[in-house]
Length: 213
Ligand code: ADP
Ligand code: MG
Image: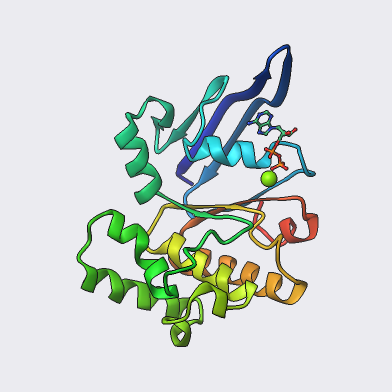
């Protein structure tokens, strides 16, 4: 299997005056292309910190993250922005949709950032909304959608750039169990269908046990 994302001796500590909080200590792992991986840890164990590093949203104290053999911390700012926009899709516990935009407009946003013409962007967004089962909700705003539907919009937005990898931070943590199952099943289905690698961090072992690794 070919390697997509590789953490090498990754460490992160936060220094607050006299206090050092050592959150990640010499982490090593690899995610292969199209693979499904769960990383399980209790609250406060450093899961969100790890995902921030994988998205080059923060600097490590030591170690490297290689994406397709390239050290993401050596990218320039614009290369990092491009890496996040083109190679990764993010799904968070809270959907982070724009409340004043429709579902369709939210899903289009990453393509608009890439200056894709509006017609092409909206066509692709409509296709993604259909894939997540929300074709009939394209014109609805987040406040008019259920929690599970909002997360499905967030997943469509994460996938619209055809990323190589989805990074998901407790993506079902804020949902009732029925919606959580639906959202989780959708992530697995899209991973299989599109070959997008899926890395989920979660405290939920039963969820993690349904993934490849
Ligand atoms: P998780 O997502 O697994 O719940 P986090 O990665 O959010 O854990 O946090 C891991 C630890 O790092 C916690 O003890 C948290 O208090 C600490 N931490 C997170 N961000 C900061 C920060 N910016 N400054 C200091 N400590 C932080
Ligand atoms: Mg967290």
